[in-house]
Image (cartoon, rainbow, N blue to C red; front, side):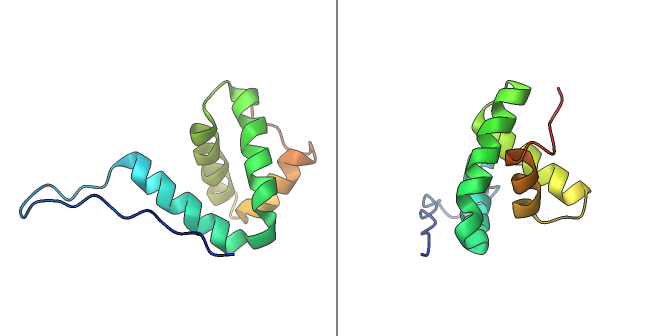
Length: 92
């Protein structure tokens, strides 16, 4: 199943082209979900668990998951599986 990235708002010529952080998160999340395929539910579940562990929003928890996966040079799906399996815990 393919996910559609919502279109970016139209900008006037010469307007600042810096991307909004929320839009970037939306794009990255969409691309990750496409790449993960069947593992996407586990990534969402892990984000919810990390959100509770760190007392942060789910969006922030997804960023923390990605940061840690990158820092540990491992796939996001693998880290998510370990979080859901309670083998990895995020500490504040």
